[in-house]
Length: 234
Image (cartoon, rainbow, N blue to C red; front, side, top):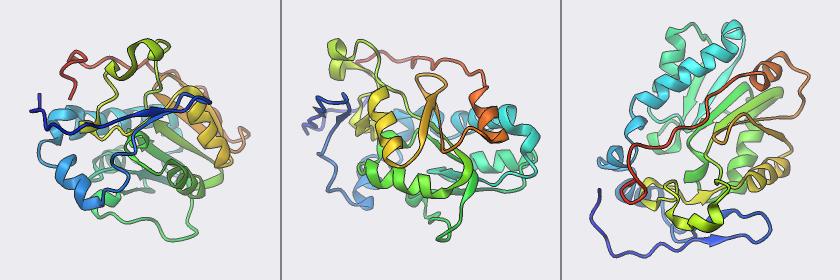
């Protein structure tokens, strides 16, 4: 799909939790990421980014917490150009906002929190996981929830290694979680994690909340594989 740049991107694995990561991009600035990854060709690496994923996630949120749409405050962290939030507004969500550092959306005012924070297909792109989860946890209200998507490693990850289609630096996938490493990151941030599927996860401080109970009771589909094979997944 892309010409070989000749640049080697090396990944490492944690022997304690199986988290896989690369430090090769840790020194990059926001401009570096925009120039080399999130440029005009990024759509080739991630076709659902522009419309399909925001539309699908808006429908998912409406299906799960639609009865609360007029009362809950929602923040979509890493929401790109804010399309998902606009689609939610069309569905009647009155208190939905979006922020994304790469799109100049800034961050919410200090001390502000939200009933539901969503973070779809963002975690795997962020080099500093400790800072990311600390910020997400701060944004979640005490009885609120974090709904995030990132695909955790398959059971045969030790056999497939970096042939796993999700391990793609051109997509910006620099942090590849195991179930254990994702749970650990949320625990460090003071939150409990429940995975609804290999892709969709809920984090919270207390399950004694109508919002959290609705999320935990949701039936979700298992993630589908991309149409491209592992050699051309971008």
